[in-house]
Image (cartoon, rainbow, N blue to C red; front, top):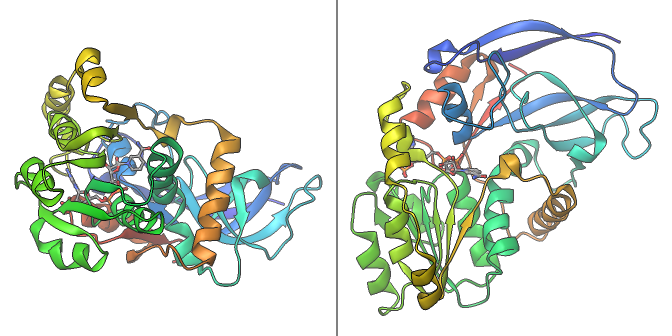
Length: 342
Ligand SMILES: NC(=O)c1ccc[n+]([C@@H]2O[C@H](COP(=O)([O-])OP(=O)(O)OC[C@H]3O[C@@H](n4cnc5c(N)ncnc54)[C@H](OP(=O)(O)O)[C@@H]3O)[C@@H](O)[C@H]2O)c1
């Protein structure tokens, strides 16, 4: 059966005002797909970068962004056996999530337990999978480890704090804009204000040792500073380039400046200091079976009360531009969601 939908579209590169919400029609459901009535869609920093044309892995314009949704299954394809109409699910959509209704393969979705609210579910996939991927899958975090994370008050930052704590980290240090100090501390982190000398402060807080894990989404020469904050045997994760986005408009000079200032690590120095550097990009990570296991563990951790997504704000789909502006203005503490029913 065809279905009317409402969806947000990026027609071309532009600021938040360029996003257009349009009406459309979804054709009949494919036999191997499920159809989800989307309640909430998650907003990620990558969505902003895609809109500005600064995200290599994005589809060509025009397209609908959105990596993750939560909602209720309203139809199942005739070949689908392991899902039912009425199931509450969270799904990883890899684009297209800013919409009222979406079709996905059953394996892209996870059935939610009764304790999981749909809001919390939509706030989980990207941020928690990224945090889990770095700390657990790549980093093998151990009890007593110390962690440094930047943009600590944001979606990934709060997920890192909760997962690191659940895995027994001794100390989690988080940098953010100064006005989020109280919030960052309430998440169990030591707060350092953006712009302060975090390398010196990390060494001070760890009695000169440095941190075991440094998670850097800023890029450019900031990455080298994060490397310097590491202890011997420490691991650096490079997972973003937020410094390429100084404002709401595309700024190609800032992007080039960031890229130019990315450090080129010397393998001999890395060898001598026993340090590792991991590159992390969930958008191009295609080991589906590992991702499935990661999501299953995350769902279990939520059920066990070890993690709980922090939702900053929920904007109606019609106000998607305001939601993006909110993130550009660095106002969010936790995750921003779209309510796709409005
Ligand atoms: N590689 C991957 O697979 C992957 C996956 C997910 C996310 N990421 C990266 O992780 C970072 C966090 O992502 P998120 O979705 O969780 O976003 P977020 O942290 O919830 O929101 C953005 C926050 O980043 C900080 N920020 C730094 N520079 C900014 C800028 N130029 N404009 C606006 N905000 C800026 C602000 O906090 P403060 O000012 O308080 O620092 C802001 O509140 C991003 O760099 C993103 O690209 C990477």
